[in-house]
Length: 385
Ligand code: NAD
Image (cartoon, rainbow, N blue to C red; front, side, top):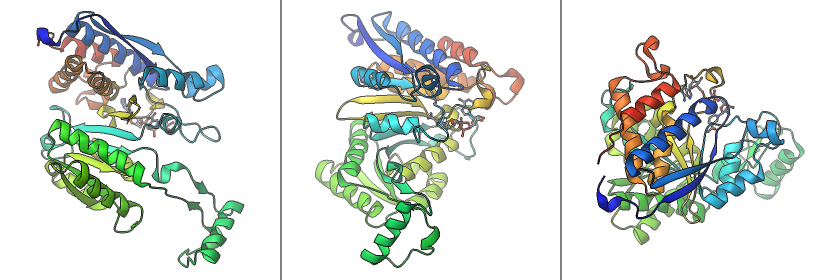
């Protein structure tokens, strides 16, 4: 660590954290411990996080009767940066998804998912070392807006009649039994997401931004996303190379030639598929980090990208890597780059040496526990820079 990067006075940042459900209870305490160790190693107590536990998901419901208490949203708004473990999706009633509700409530329009390969992690690719992408997925529009009606409902019948009688639609194959969903996609919503991707590419010297869309079929939504992207780039980021590819072609091309892609900007549904597809190429969702960010308000929630894995909950065996790498993204976001690098370096070293949890272990009997892996990460952080 160089003298110029030392903080001049003590900095303490309050970070609300949601432990999460299921394996959240196993991985979140380990994440806090590793982050604290990285801060101590890099800044010797001059930069610290004051962890503030807030509730969401099943634990919140059991304690308060609400899946997403207002106090949790308030804490995330007030402190701007938060981190969360995985949350159970309520079945039947309540929120469609607590994660989606949190993103919508804070207008966290960009879901940012870096995808890179770590040496030592098994991959289905012949050469995973060329995978180095960052996905910017739009988080607030598209079919995730939840505007849909079940087949046979009065609303579906009303909409169907409107489409046929007043809009002249003739292509509803089975009107009596059709459910309907609406896909809103706006210029503002698309532009702010694509702008974030372009700015990231420009700031980090990335080779290109690829717009991934289904504009060949959905001309006025996804096709517009593509055109708005090109127009925006020409106006605001003329030096960034922009290209586009149809979503299905992207799935093949990214597998065969991953080195051709760098920053990806995609509407919500494409981005959802793509994020997990790319994660699978480099070891799966157990090690894929993610963040949900609004670059105007500066609100950000960093998160494990996997679910609650109920079968493994409470066994102390889950892999905390996704949450640890998300915490590294959070430290980077706070400008505490050395601590971010320390976490990533410690984790990368463990993966390279085969010090891993059950899901990545070649020999399951030699797998580390969740906390054992956390300790190994701490031991392999280089303390001097
Ligand atoms: P999941 O990601 O919880 O688990 C699928 C499988 O992946 C698990 O059985 C396990 O084998 C493996 N796995 C996942 N994370 C792992 C880790 N950290 N370490 C080791 N192995 C891991 O997906 P699911 O079973 O479809 O969903 C379970 C619950 O989680 C549901 O309620 C779902 O809605 C919720 N969920 C939440 C989020 C989130 O909070 N971001 C994301 C996805 C699913």
